[in-house]
Image (tube, rainbow, N blue to C red):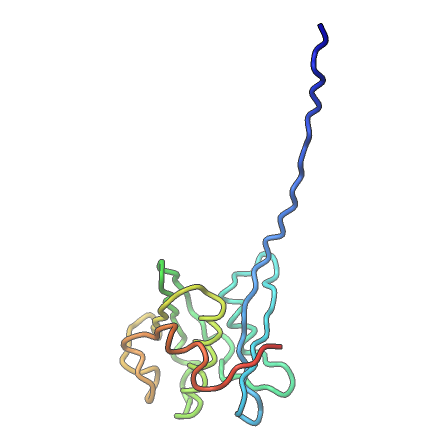
Length: 154
């Protein structure tokens, strides 16, 4: 009686688990937003990397996100809570405050699969970001995916 020949087959699967972030920049002419995708370097925290990239626009685009603005971020099932550094926000005028929020909200909604984003400033809930934009109720994905500027992909 012959024994069946059993040949073990070793299947090696190489998974490349790369994480990407989508960053919105605003054109110098203020008429168009652009979304750029970046791969998060291994060992970097994605939310911190996203804010770092938002603060560093490519030539021809501008950013309203100051460096070192992010204090912390918390992912809570269907929502993202970000805690911002109030000192970095000081001095924003009406236009800058709105465009800052536009840039971070669109970037966050395009990167994270959440339906709401809430903003804290210096660890506290506020009525207004600084002086102009009400942040007390948070922001819903459906309202912020493309508003107020048209966004193109590059």
